Length: 367
Image (cartoon, rainbow, N blue to C red):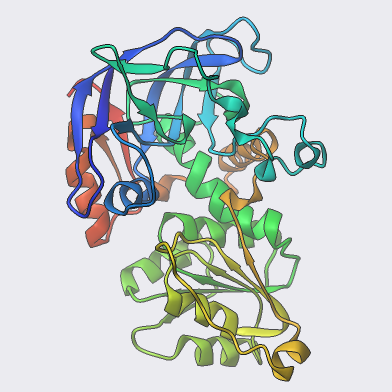
């Protein structure tokens, strides 16, 4: 199979296009023909920063495709199904899974092969790491059925693949983690692919005021297309003061989708009394935000919570978002900035780093 392989970690790390071998499915594994693979910023962060990820590895976790073959114990999918992968590994039997909190599974390694079993991916007989248990920057993927959701075949593959991360993380943070209610006020810090879906989630939830915050007017214009009722360019005005003025004291919910100390603090400071800030963006290792926890902190009753993958229940949420798209209730088309070939992955990540690109999606595996 053709794949983009990461062989080093560092600020100049790049992907190499190589040929790899992939095993046949065993147990609850599913072999996919990958039709679309989204370039999420977190994969670039993972090879550019030393977060302990091993290499050589195939990254990429935002994929959609067609089931080619299934293992003997598979029950959830069948050959020919259109599926989306989502990085919420779960066992289905621990106390958190049984409580409906699969995103908090106590045994996420359940979806991996056991020690002593052959690797799923190899190159010249040597094992290759399948990062995030997906390895989606390749024309084939071998994954456990627990991280796959079947979707309606009418959804185009490029739009489908972004549901697995950008949509699930952004909309899920608003709908699943914050439980935003009709009429609530919301501030969204960062209007990239995930933040735009936070706005979509707020629209679906019926939020009254949806305030998008960014430093790029072009991105704020896009945020309005996704449903932002107000926008704040934080490079030109004090974001906290602007939000407080727009809401008469602060928002009910704020969502930080960037991973920067300054915006995390702003997300907390823009809250109204009893509000909650949700930290979703991936910050650098060791990042901290210091809060004054004296009496005013107690009386304000504000909260800060980290959110992983939008607290997603992937078997329920991903088909739901796909249906919302087909019903015209969720904008996925504007998330896909361009379709590219596998060989263009490094250039596309350079474009993403410079801004102006929401999502590049690999759909051509021939070059």
